Image (cartoon, rainbow, N blue to C red):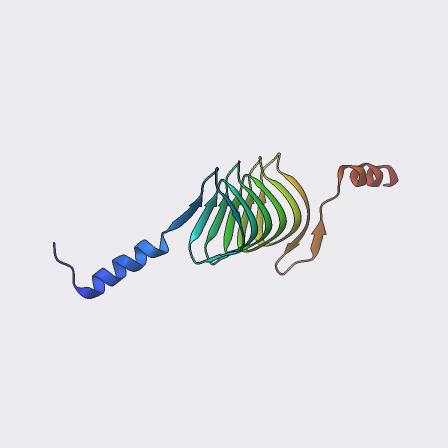
Length: 140
């Protein structure tokens, strides 16, 4: 099988664009990560993650800091700021504390969100704590 130089370059670019960096569950990273690849985090990260790709936080994954990415699926815990330019999907096991900015938001039943939520191009929303919900229901 023969490939010319342009096909080889195209194949290499496709492989590079499909890379996923995995931070497995026994790994702890303290510091900032900048990449163009997709990430799956099953371990712990303390710092800023900035990527033009997708960030997946597994059920055992914990991020304390800031995440800036294109899309994100969260099943684990985030304490800090989350800036997703595309779609943010919160699974039922997700735990979010901090500030969230997303283009689009999908939340499964059971996800815990204690955060200010801003939709890009929309008004800012704020999740109410359990005490605030009870007080607002009594006054309504």
